[in-house]
Length: 424
Ligand SMILES: [Zn+2]
Image (tube, rainbow, N blue to C red; front, side, top):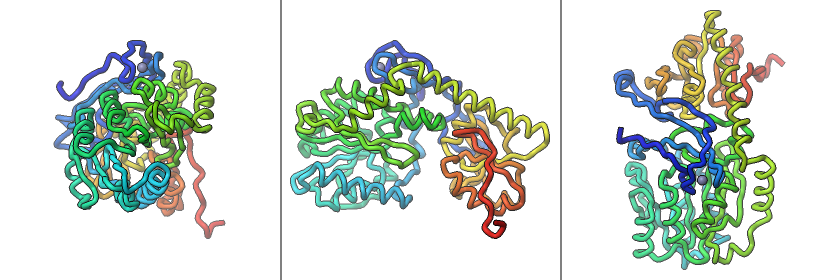
């Protein structure tokens, strides 16, 4: 099986002192929605989360060939207005703070459709370079101010960029730094490409959000790492780098923006109070101790038991259950809990591109919201639980007819829905 490789050592420090926290068993890729004709050839891979006692990194040890994982990558960031606004604000912050635009080079790792590079270019940054392997996506950038390097970023690619364009004063990477199997090679490339006083800024989903929010549905093969400041400081230090600032961002239900520079760079001389505060908080939370993560695993196992008891009971009573929100996150919940087509009749999703496809592993059909009226379920299990209120609004008709919502997280419960205005 060339598409799969199991690590036996920590991806960051190479230690063998790894503790298994959660074992999902053999699961289909969370993003792999498929048609019935492809059920027989569907592949499953182990998915295990480990904690490194040496450097505190929480990580998935099961590595899927990125060509398989991202082959059908149809995620265009710019399609989402709130993301566009987010990245305009991002450019408005980092360019004035760190760059003399006319004399600067900015490089983005995983530039997607240019959602951040365009606003960076709007600030007059001299050279703007985007690196991304998704040909169909970078092709849409079509902006003469932006140079595209259409490949996966690596230390070799970083050397080529430096040889051709000189060092970078700013390197950015958003929602990709947790997805990179060869994290040391890539970080070596970043350290080598950074100018002496340059900064590396990146956003990732934050470990604290996962642990406190019990967001185990964030765990799938694409997301290899769940970063704490503690683990990142250990990692960056081995590459001659320092985390000098942090900023929580609410996007995607709890991300963190990390600011990194060379140890000999000017920003390393004033590490922000927020960094010291976050480090202290993480030590108090126990993100450097395995028992903290064992407790996390125990909490999610309890939610699994509660949810399955509820679904089994509904099945025994002959009640109909449907799901809402056919995302990768939903597939993690479905596969971790062992939910099947016997528990859930169909999955609703608002994206028409998914209709007619089936969920990976569990093979539940994805349909439009119209099904709520034509085949109303007794319960609607809201997998997109972070958008509960919005979904309750969209399902008002169903709720008025006596439909009920269930959430799988942060608590398994039946939700008392917002009552329609005229009934108040
Ligand atoms: Zn380690």
